[in-house]
Image (cartoon, rainbow over all chains, first blue to last red; front, side, top):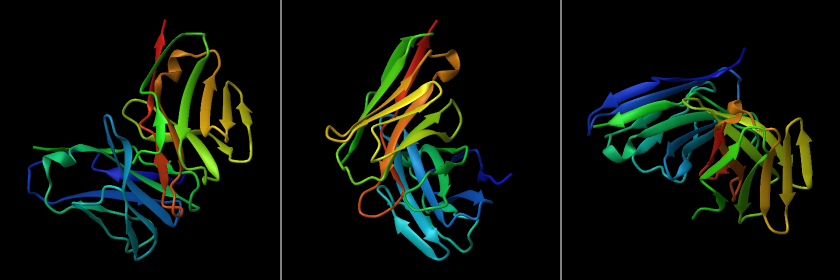
Amino acid sequence: DAEITQSPRHKITETGRQVTLACHQTWNHNNMFWYRQDLGHGLRLIHYSYGVQDTNKGEVSDGYSVSRSNTEDLPLTLESAASSQTSVYFCASSPVQGGELFFGEGSRLTVL
Amino acid sequence: GEDVEQSLFLSVREGDSSVINCTYTDSSSTYLYWYKQEPGAGLQLLTYIFSNMDMKQDQRLTVLLNKKDKHLSLRIADTQTGDSAIYFCAKTSGGGADGLTFGKGTHLIIQP
């Protein structure tokens, strides 16, 4: 079955370190998204991509970057992790723009 | 700013009906969605309604859309313990199809 997977599921890192969260989907969806989920804020869009070599900033993109070198993967990089980036991160994909999102299981990141 | 609003908590007795409400400010969305998030998991699409519909029923779920008041509701009949989760209202983000805008989520608590 097609799916979307995130790794690692849990990570603890230190302030200032670079961290990359992986997202891989096997549905061949063009559209991929990264959200962060925080208590009191719900889900907020970090970055998104409509296809290979396309990346766009979302609502809370500062301190994050993404790259899209193929259809299946959209890794999220924190160049210099900050404690404010402690959160649960969700990757999602969609076959059509504005349509249903299919979510991964989430990656819990703790920055000490 | 936030343009999808939900109450953060709803407590109901097992067997009763649950009604989760959502209001939004931008009426340009073609579809409006309800997602369910169980503990430790990603979001899964529960149901959706096309913007030109007033009501959609799917087994125990009833979605009502009042476009004039920009109000969306989800009714769960005969609420069970397995319905305990966070429920997110979502709509297409404005200015193009750059993902979905989510409310902060309503925690549904089931009392025995």
